[in-house]
Length: 104
Image (tube, rainbow, N blue to C red; front, side, top):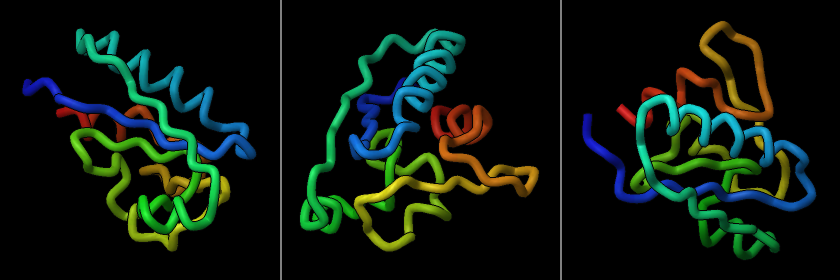
């Protein structure tokens, strides 16, 4: 298993889901024995969202790749993000499986 060099979590303070996403991400990292600090980036304006190609909060990138490639192409927005889970439900945070696959 290759160890990622960089893990970033982009969030908008107006969205309440980023603490849950961070906790899940840290749990998955710990379970996999990956000792890397998650870089937190607050997105504070629509212009910044556009510049970062930020499809909503929270957005997690592993070595620059979004953990949800399908959702990464959504329009940039200073809003909460919706993740489509493998079973067809929607969630405000990525699934454990999405995180594990992104780290594989």
